[in-house]
Length: 407
Image (cartoon, rainbow, N blue to C red; front, top):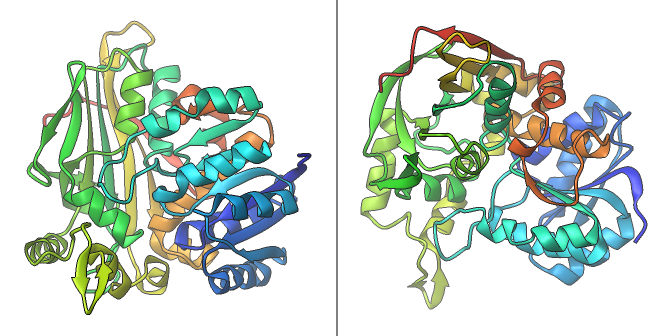
């Protein structure tokens, strides 16, 4: 199938998609035509209307079930995009990759595949597609969000410019925003709660070490936010970073949660509302977590009331490039919820994922990141991506610390 240069098909119509499509429309020199599809066309229409109002650019919209491969194939053939940008749910990664394979179109996503019936997100399902994508002469870029995504690029920038080797790595994800809700998640509730309630895993001495969920807590003082409790969790970039930085002795991922969030989550777990096994209710099967997600506030509706900042970054310790011994560097981005909402109509958590999805797409469309097969962010030159972060709303800072983290 022939493709149209600069034409993209974006799948999904949540907050991340809204940000990504807005930012694509603001870069019409890169993205010539934008097509947007999801299960609920009205959500696509709302995003398209906002994009038209804010940028003057048109976005074509469609209704699609991303798990229906033949329907996806037909839509891709109709549009002839150069790139399919998957901003739907992680369950849909493999069907969309299958559709890309059948049509010969490159692929990008922000989160790795996760089966519906098990809270387990790993790259091996998607890495298994490498040879087929290579043989088809197309590229798949995995995890082009913030974490995973920017955190991996941050790490590789440090390895290119500051550190010859990286011995220890800590990824710190802080959302200091306040949305005024008793309990709400800042991205898809179902995915968010599945991640948090899964066992934590971190990389240490050549293997993953598993610990109970939320069992390790540390207080950290985040710039532009203040002191916050952060909890050790598993996140998929640990899997790819440990693969592409073989000298890593220890790598951990931390995310902040307020006491009220933890209290509500504990109660919901105790009463079975976070379960993913089907139960019978009024003669029908339902998934408790999916029902909970349906009654919680939608993340894309939180933008107007959310105030404060996010602060996400990496602290890496290793042998300095200049031969001056071991050094520790902290590289991070601070994003304002209010500024994100003013620009795109979405809160900062959606913004920090949607902007990198746009930038990863630009890397591919402009030929700055190329290859046949399935790739992670760590495998490419970080510099052009880092330049676009500074230019498109996610400026970063790097500083040297006195020594390795003590937690």
